Figure 1: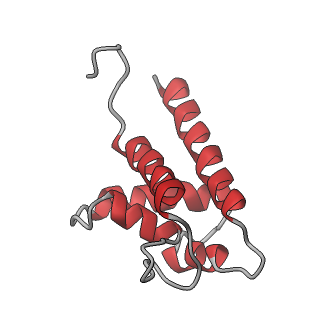
Figure 2 (figure 1 turned 180 degrees about the vertical axis):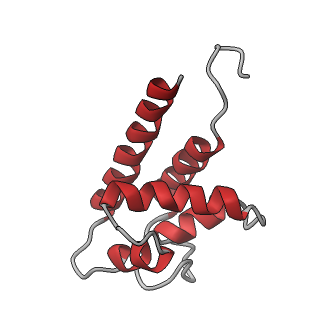
Amino acid sequence: MPLDGTTYNPTLEILQAAKTYIIERGWCQGSALNRAGNVCIVGAVNMSLNWQDDTDLYCNVLWHLEETLGLPEHLSWELANWNDVKGRTVDEVLHLFDTTIARVRQEELVNA
């Protein structure tokens, strides 16, 4: 447990790290990671996990993002398709992360 009395939530940590990764490195469409180092939503999650083999955490983070969007099937390619929609903006992507982070925090409070 952190010293401030809060509990450690790896899902929240990766959501925040992925958002920060996009802010710092840039966002792209059509590729998880492009030559310039920009990432899509799924790529940002992968980079935030340092490509470690933690399937449960990876799936949990994507599930929360998909849940925020109301994607019923919870398939990562649906999230990638949302990312790649023509006209999508980085502001919309960052808003998705903000909304998902707020929702996960709210769930923590309800379940505490």
